[in-house]
Image (tube, each protein chain N blue to C red):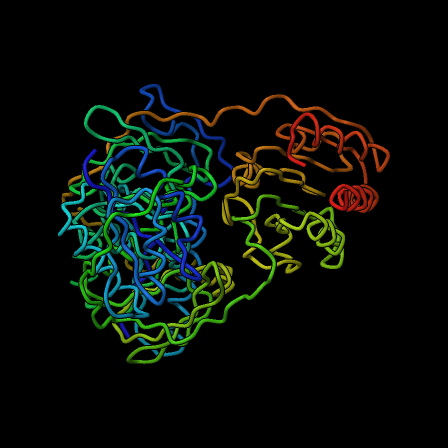
Length: 250
Length: 314
C-alpha cells in the first residue's frame, strides 16, 4: 500500500499573535512551529495503516526550505520518508493553490490513500483534503473518527452535527482525521535516531496563482473590563442580578 | 453583487436556521439569491428559503457528498453565480471545499462578516482560531465561503418566486450507509445559546454532574470542556472548546474550574457574556470574564443552578 500523510507546520498553539508592520501578515518574530495537531493524527493513522496492510508512508508538506524539524518528528514516529514542496510564500498560499501543488506530487507517487488533518490550526480552512480528492477524482470522507481500511476500500465513521455517519468507499481515497481517530504515539529514542537516516527530499513546489488577497489583519476587539462580583456561593445572587439586569442574558 | 448561490439544509420540510442565516448574509450583499436544496422534503422546504429569488431542487436523492458537490457546482454554472455560500455546519464544511474545487475557486471557511467593497465583497474570518481576524478578498471566479453559525441575522424575507428542478444527482464515490442520529440529546456546544464549561478544576468525570444539572436548568445549554479534561477522558472531544476543539460564540458562557489557557480563550472569547468561577483569583480566565466569582465550583455551581431553576419557573 502506497500511503501518504499530508502535514503542515503551524505556529504553536500557545502563540500570542500580533499583526506585522504592513498590517497584512502574522508577525513572524518569535513564532515557534509545530506539526498541526490534526496532522499528527493523520501521520499516526498512516503508520497504523502500514502496520496493518504493509507498504510505505510518505509525508508531504508544503513549506519553506530547511524547515525540517516537523518532518523529522513525523519520521521519528514511523513515517518512511518525507517530501517538502518548497515555497517561501507557503503561509500565504491559498487552499486551492496548495491542493493543486499536492495533487501533482500525490499523483506522481501513485498513492492509494492520503491522510490529512481535518484542518490546519493556523488558517482553520478545512479545505485542502476534500479539494485534493475532488481534483484527483477520488473519494473523500472528512472528520473521520473511526476507520476500517482494507486493500481496496473501507468504511469510515464521520462526526456530523446530527450524529455519526458511516461511509463506504473504494480506494484511492482521501481521509481527513478528527481527534478521536487515534492516539498519536510518542517518538522513542530509537525512532528519533532512525529518523536521522530516513530520506528527506526538498523539491520546488509548482507555481500557483493565489486567489486570496489580504485586505487587512486585525486583533479581535478587546473585551471590556469585567469585575469580580464576589466570593463563594454568597455571590450568586449578585451574579444573577448582573446577568438579568445589566447583561440581560437571563 | 450579482447572483449568489446558497446551499440550504433542511429538516421537517423547512430550512434549518443556520441556512436561513446564510440566506440572510447573501441577501445583505446581493439582490439575486438562488437557493439550492436536495433530498427528501426539499421541494416543501424550498418554499421557505427566505430571501431567495429562486430555488433549485436537485432531482433524485443521494447519500454521496461528491455527487452532491457536482450537482451544486453545475447549478452555480447554470445560474452564472459569482459567489457561493453555505453555513459552516458539518455538511456545509464537508461539501463547500469540493464545490469550490469544481469551480476552480478557493474557499474561505467559517466567515464572521460579509461586506460590500467596490464591486466585490470582503469576507472576515478568524485565523489561529480567532487570535487574529483577517479581512479577505477572493479573486476567484466564484467567491466561495462558509459562514459561521449564530453570527448572521436569519433572513425573514419572502420565499422564492419560483422553484425549479435542477440537475439530477449522479452516482458518487463515497456513499453514506448509516446515520447514528443523536435524537433529542443535548445541544451541540457550537450551537447552544448557553454553554456551561468545565476544566480540570471539576476534579473528575463525576464532577461534571453539577455542570450537567446547571445546563439542564437553563434548558437551552450545552456542556463544554477544556482540552485537559478531554485528554483525561472525562468528557468527549465533541465538547472541547478551544484551538484544537470548537470555537463558540454563545450568548452566555460559564467557565467553571477553567484557568483560561490561551488555546481555550481563543475558542470562546467572542461569547457575548462570559462568567468565570474559579478558586484562583489570579486565573487568566478572569481577564476575559465579564463577571467573576472567586470560589469553589462545587459550592457556587449548585447555588447557581437553584437560582436559574427558580427564575425559569417564574
